Amino acid sequence: MTKKLRLLSWNINSLRLRLPQLALITAEEEPDVICLQETKVQDADFPSEALNAMGYTHQLFKGMKSYNGVAILARHPLRRLGHYPLWCGRDDCRHLAASLTLGGQALTVHNFYVPAGGDEPDEGANDKFAHKMAFLREAQAWFAANPERGALLVGDLNVAPGPDDVWSHRQLLKVVSHTPAETEALEAWCATTFSDAMRHHHPAPARLYTWWSYRNRNRLASDRGRRLDHGWATPDLLERVVGARVLESVRDWERPSDHVPLLLDLAWPG
DNA sequence: ATGGTCGTCATACGA
Image (cartoon, rainbow, N blue to C red; front, side):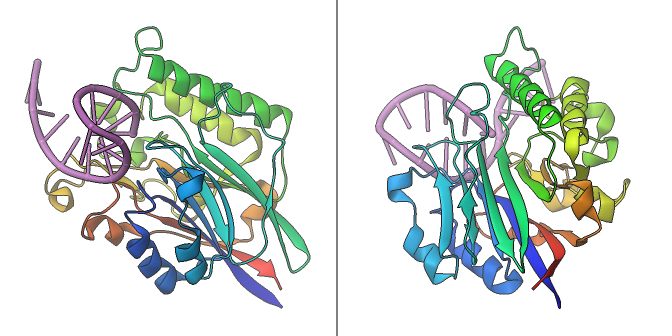
């Protein structure tokens, strides 16, 4: 019997503030696994009970006060995978990995929040951009040396890699998130052991934005979006990915995150 | 060329 395994990834930009939105989305979409970025909550204050009430009784989280923070939530038992690097030697809550076994088949889930990189795309002048590039290179080198099978990688990778992943390729070539240095680094990381499952289902030039700046007024009219959030699958899983969606309408809810959720559906035994 | 807006935490800072 083949069932469906649905994974949702969302940069929620404060988990506690947007718990009601997460409850609406989970009731509507019923994901089995949820990967959150920018939870902005330290572990002692993690809202476990509220998530239990939504049915996500298995919770891995790694947060810090005010900044960053990632979580993986599931309706089925999760095993935390702890054999990955800290990335740039910083324990700043940007990655969690988990394994879950359903229908006798194991799945690895990576949840990443790549540094945004500041404003100036110059590694010499901007420490935040240097950190971002070092993070991308280290991730690429690590997965090149340790390729995986049966794995998904999702999250806010803070890079819009392709010309059709931004509202204007020409106008964003020197803007952090779409510089050639970043897009080449992201594509090299992906190519180590993954395929772009979102684009597999929505080939370029299909519009597939996941982020719109808070600073853009009239976002519907101007639609200056970027595809910063991603869903990758190892090639052995790619044929199991039977659906991929971006929940764009969530961007127009009251008090939205600047990112919207994405969904991956896998055909899964069980 | 500039500033535009959020969330957190209380004043700047990161996005």
